[in-house]
Image 1 (tube, helix red, strand yellow):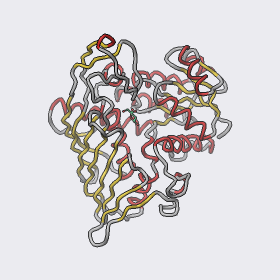
Image 2: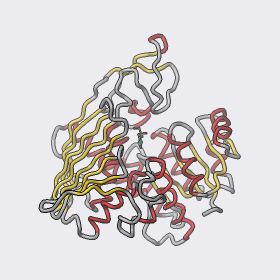
Image 3: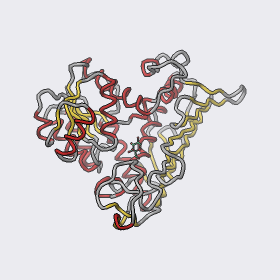
Image 4: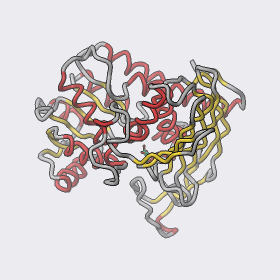
Length: 383
Ligand code: SOE
């Protein structure tokens, strides 16, 4: 893995998080490309990276770069992922994979023509150890049949009318925002845990701020900066701040997902509760090192993340003993470690050990069904 050279595209909020995780994985980060050369230079200096790229062509022409990470605004994911695959680079793209299912379908098809390239999407939430334990409990039969699934993913960083980020603009982030930005983490996670597909959706979404006050100049995710009125301009918003989605799953189970980016006090809170025919599981991303296990005829349990207490399949994803808590940054490390271990093994016919472009495409198809359901106020079957 140490011989794999990686080029980082994106120097906003999550790009530097990728860099930190990649340093922990042990690949060689060759350099970074920001929104312009000035940002590339600032980011390379701040992150201690050897190269500050001037443009995408330079990073894709670099023979020392075998893989690129794409952590840019969503509208750039498709063209950049396409160019990187065509340049013969492995690609790890931030979610969502693209703006439309036509784009994501094209990327899935292109990736299939590159059999020796890995093409992944950063659905990092899968890699919380106790989320992996929930999957193992389903796979080994301890959970039983999935009866129903409920949950939410709620934040408050877009709570105020003056909270702004490129994600709120349909032309930058896509027509669906809260659901696409964070709801798809929950949908991908529950697919991975339950092994079930969503077959139909019924959605009801809302926009709290149809007019937001945009700073004159860009603001990074989670910046939380408070500006004065003369530094702001009004901008029309059509994307969703929150919404409820009814779900039907491929085994007949039903579910409910609630998504919000305007829930005061919930900073980055993904929750699920899965009712199985033998037991129930509940987990929350703001307390990721414990999972509630519910029983009908015996005391309920709280499992603490501990390599000695989880299924053997989960142990490789735990790097610290019980009580030495692991969290969000560790999920990035584990996702990227899976991605680069797969590449280093060199058997591209083996089943992927990371979220693939095909799974990223599934989320885009789901988002389009959710948006259509909301607009037509009816159930929509998922293609
Ligand atoms: C903002 O909602 C955000 O940074 C998402 O874009 C990420 O995918 C999520 O992990 C945290 O919140």
